[in-house]
Image (cartoon, rainbow, N blue to C red; front, side):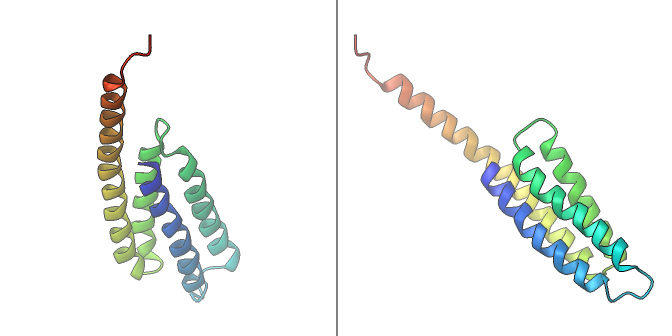
Length: 118
């Protein structure tokens, strides 16, 4: 699960950076505000790469997905990109857990089929 979720978060890192560049063109927003919000979100993406397998990591990832969709109120294309990344996040969590379960099953089978060397 960690690999799939981390890949999604790294993709979001870049998308948030590019969205910050687009948001800078809005005359109502200061550059400081745009890069403070974008920087925090980008930092959160990187931190979540390490926290995704810990308790609450997936929930924080969902909070990031909601924030990414909500950023569409500032940069309208983010409604679409946020929805795409939310779908990728769901797929990463869902299929990542299935892969982890399969790996654990195969490891258990391999351990039980190993002859005792006594």
